[in-house]
Image (cartoon, rainbow, N blue to C red):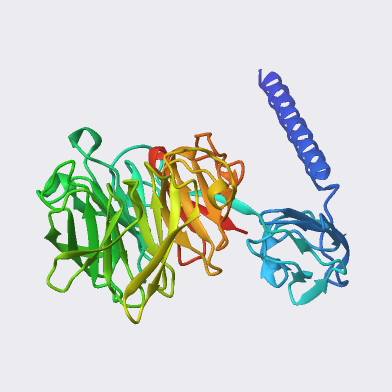
Length: 443
């Protein structure tokens, strides 16, 4: 009996040893297969570079750098394009894959391995492209929180403060659509500052602007909905707004603009195309009328020097107007059509001056070269207008709504109304019925 047990135990041991040997060989074979294309660094010799591909591209283009003795430790590998560091994705010792950084520009491709630097002979040619991203929001809801969690109901108007906080107005005119609200996005957090549902003064907030020293925020409320205030102000301290005070009960005030040079405050009435100045005693003094066609003012802004005012008008106009302003005498010149038909005619045609067509143009902003950008709401796109009045589509597919990021001319928006440049140079868009804020970046 003992002899039988001995042979059984010895057989099991041999079987166990055989299994271990087979497993070891199998693992060694797999490891060998995985390693056969790898080249490990030789500490006694330097790396050598040959070429890289592609030699042109834009942001996020992936370059393959060829050579030998690179090593596989990504912490020891650094690649720059035009002296801007890229993101190293992988290395097998002979090929390094790196992502080109945003706004790299054209220039030398350099590889740094430990304490050695190598420069490829061929310069990389960087091609700039205009790209649309989603900055904030996802689905329709009024929900504060960090940027990854916050949700928006219908952003329609936005503006950056001097301390790099993004303030915006949410659409709303009744309890059915959550009323309107003023919210701020700052330090990776969205906070609601003013709820129309909690105020008897406002219900359908439309626009706002900051005083020159940014201590005061002026707001317009289209009280054709409800609320006893047509125009008012709030105190601003940091990213907090307090003490809402009514300045006027005039109905239909929808636009406000503070002159950056003189600190004067102007408001626009939705119907009639009337523009008034806020006087020291709190009254509103009419200063000009756009025309006799009862145009509906959607937005007003000044040029950066305060010497030109631009107005976007929707119904009965669907045009962009321009009027000069003398900051010394504080008087306006003659108003003219910058672009659009100056008539109740809609369309989505690009072109110059009165040949261009819009459909409910909304908020505007001006770049450093004097070009005007406008959210062409019902055309679901963003227009660019040169100082000479030449209109082109800057982003979006005119006449087609949707939610799509990527290349600016294939990206899609849904009733975008807000449009404002940020401190980073990107153009931020209040994409109203996609319930998000988008950003357009040249990279």
